[in-house]
Length: 133
Image 1: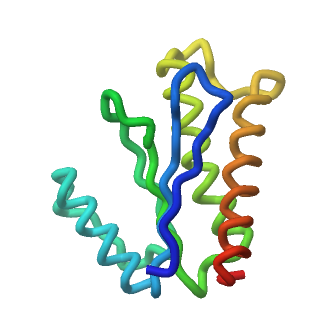
Image 2: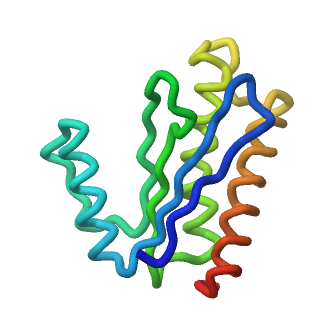
Image 3: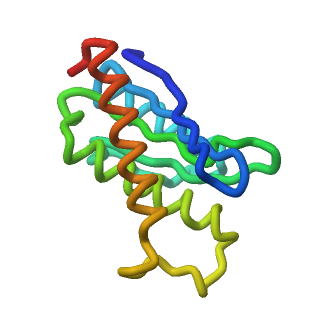
């Protein structure tokens, strides 16, 4: 494991966080993703083409609602932003209690865009500090 850190979102109605794991290789990422899926009773999940993944969940009392897995060589800005967008959408859903009236639309997307920027910003800082970038 190259890195394991948690990004806390303080601008939310309740504590929310995303855990980020940077695996040593794509093979290690895929194996960890498979173990996670089995633990969540998804034994048929196929990760053979996975280069990055965001597992989304919500457990009462736990601020961590997503786990993003990344691994070299698929660790550029595009993959980071893509996986963090999945996390940001899930954070939006939790923040707005899955109410359909709070769909992400142009003009009602400021919090989502802020969260996405914060996730990518903090991930990039961690990757630089850990000399992965």
